[in-house]
Length: 524
Image (tube, rainbow, N blue to C red; front, side, top):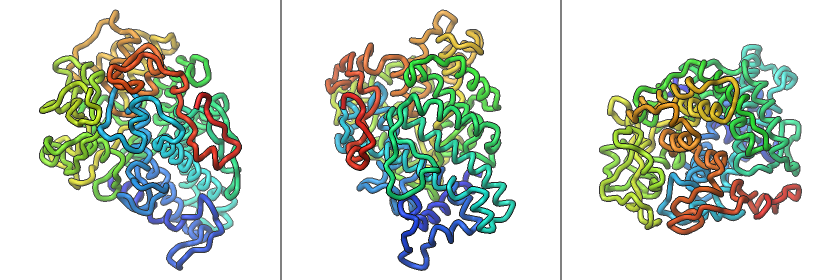
């Protein structure tokens, strides 16, 4: 079913070329008869499914033609303009888990934790997420019963579109969640605002927290069911994971603890039928679409959904020619860029099978920041299937990115219990943690070892390079205080404290110029 869905994504990308004006100017005349006017496209029943697929594809691809053609966002490097690559850089390079040998495009600013409003990856993430919101808004505007009836859309299509509309709302809420986590104070735009010359108002986390909460709760119960046929689609466990994340970080976002609410939704996720993948590394290989643990993936395919971002970046960026990646890891690209900081690689005990590092001709320390051999290489993500064969293409991987998975829910459950949330208990929390550790051959822990200090370290061991670390460190009050790691504040030894403004990113300078209603975040 994964392959069928990816074909739909490709079709959607081609369709959206016909919709080049749908986000900006719906009245633009097409330049040739091969490009449809939006209203003509919406009159076709197949448009609705294809536009839905485009909304999912916006998590993975840079535009309408892989790996870098017909782009959504202007930029010289379309790999950087993808959702996952820019988001991953903000969530990982700013922390104790990763460094990069490259210093261009603001990467040094991220690693030193001294970025500015001109940082490229701040702008790319901001623009990509708001573009995803705009796609959803346009879809919701065009799929009212009134409009579909006027176009003569058949009853079966209209019934399917009612589910698509719920999926779209969930996708929009997810993007707003990412935006408030990263930027806090962002423009609010919904389907009622229309298109054209419009300057949206800026809203803060106090506004968006209940808005996201309400939207996600309204979607629950009306989404595609958990099944192989619906792999890659937002389902009830997905929205429950986002709600759990929202509640786990509520003290950061709105100054109120909501760990009981987090446990309510974590219990739903845990009861949804996912089970831990027996072999850890199989969740990050070319056939991970068959994983029993992944709740919501970002889908990639070596033939049909290709990009220089996504899991291509997480592999090629972490590989070098001396690692023989085509032989060992199923990918011929090797860019010699990203690798592990010693604060990550030193967390693992001997035998822990989650420690997926290449150590040959490498130092564990990263004191030579721009030397790829300074720091162990990460081989967590590969283009190799669980049976040892390679993916469908050696240039672009088939490997999907596990944005949400069950082990994360288990660790959040344990943390919420330790923080006083009601609806869970300590013995169950300990059992979940030990289930994860047993899978890793890492050895069980006893009740006395189950502490918040243990949880933040275990989250690194289990979830490293999966895009959670910055948010986790902020929640544990370890991002701008109480913890030094290499290159924090621009020196190898790191510094413990940073200005608290770095808990959120600045609004991009270009946005401030374009919209007089948007004010810069404090301190920038």
